[in-house]
Amino acid sequence: LISLPNLRIIDYVVGHTGSTHDSTCFQDSCISKEHESLFSPGEWIWADSAYPVTTWCVPPYWKPYCEIPQNQWFNTLLAHIQIKSEHTVGYLKSQFASL
Image (tube, rainbow, N blue to C red; front, side, top):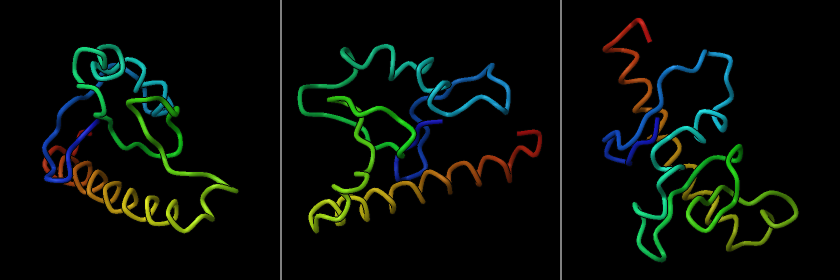
């Protein structure tokens, strides 16, 4: 599930079992497959640490780079976005218990 901070879902993948890792499912998403046609130069998405670093997919910094103050700030902002994404999933699960 890929969502915006306003809880709007912009992409999703179905068909994988619950034990499939998120990054594996992400490879089957429209955004992953068609990013060249979906993003303009300089556009990208934030992702959690399980996702690859690409020009259009930016995960948080890991050690030792996460200890640089600017990167700490970036990771903090990313964490706020990730919380919104979790809210989206929670909202969906509260509406559709079968999920």
